[in-house]
Image (cartoon, rainbow, N blue to C red; front, side, top):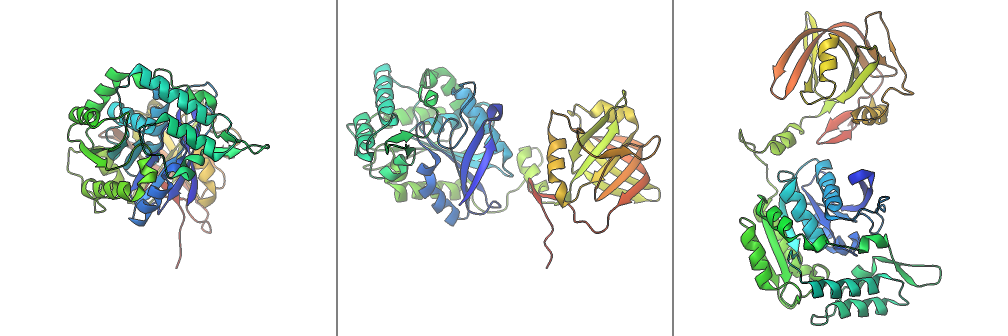
Amino acid sequence: MERRDFEGFGGVRLAADAFGSPDAPPVVLVPSGGQTREFWHGSAKALAEAGRYAICVDLRGHGDSDHAADGRYDIDSYAHDLHAIVAALPSRALIVGGGLGAITALVTVGESAPHLVSGLVLVDINIWFEEDVLKRLHTAFLERTVRASSPEQIAQAIVAAHPDEPAPRATDRLLSAFAADENGRLEWRGDHRALEFGDLYRQQERLGVAASRIVAPVMLIRGSLNSTISNETLLRLQSMIPGAELGEIEGAGHFMGADREDSFNSILLDFLERHAPRKPLSYIGGSEPRVLRDALGCFGTGVTIITTFDGAGQPIGLTANSFTSVSLDPPLILFSLSKRSANLDTFTEAGRFAVNVLHIGQQPLANRFAQRDGPRFEGVDWSARSEEGCPILGGTLASFDCRNHAVHDGGDHLIFIGEVHHAWFAPHRDPLLYFRGKYRRLHFT
């Protein structure tokens, strides 16, 4: 198991545990409200053994994730967090969500991330709740998240919330959301403001629209004894999601992901192998660009910082791996820049640029110049080594000072071809590499 952190909406740090190889197809497991990432550890281990990279996350304000400084625990905040997680992964992820986690996944994929996922498994999901049911569940939820004198007291509160269902057996998974204080009493590990769901479950129209827009494969799973989510409810939701499948675990109620782990994992792995099998993915012209990006990410590159001066003489720079040599006679190199870049006009009008190739110790510099905002050159060693030269960063593996030779249209990018006037390099340093969305280093045999 590896501990990971992700940056969510508004800079909130989201804690996660990862199982398996990072190079394997990712699966993101999102718990329900009040639960922590440990709830999914059993399924995560099974996924890792089946050749997947399983990532269990804590919702904001839950477990080891940051509390929201602004107190935002609405569906939009949770959805933005999940969008940030799947967007940070090197390839498309399958999302497994339970309860609140399932609703978050539905909104995220239905509203903003249709092509960032390979599928959805939604557990114990309902988008139609009656007022009295909401109040009963919320009261019982608060009772088990205040300080308790014993694990039995928490278990009793869970049973009280679902009196018509089997008592949960995997209480260790549920108790992982609690920690003992100095007096030995158990306290919920999180921000208690996150327990006030407000109108989270009442956005029925919005959730219905989001469900109808999902284009990824979907599996809906419930326990047959779940007293608040009936089979009819799931059939109704299934009819709204094109192609959605329905799975039911006999004799299970809430918390079946832990109580009936073998049965649940069997359904989950079967769904994965049918809809996101571990075989080479293919891109056909006109299909979704994320697959093409993943394929292109299989080509390892170096990492550079491209620099120039703006019209006011201020240094401008950005991180790029779209750099290659073109010709020795004349000496030409190129890089490409997105037409959506805020610096596009600056590089076009400057008529010159420099390419600074980074070494393995300059990953922090690459991260700094990859940010959209913030002072990039502050505290950085750089200089213009000739009267009309561009900013050359100190200590790089290599630097090339160029004049624009040609600028070509390249789809959603412009291709800048530069003629090299000066070059510097340090032959005894190793390069910083980039492969499948991550920084890498050379491994010699």
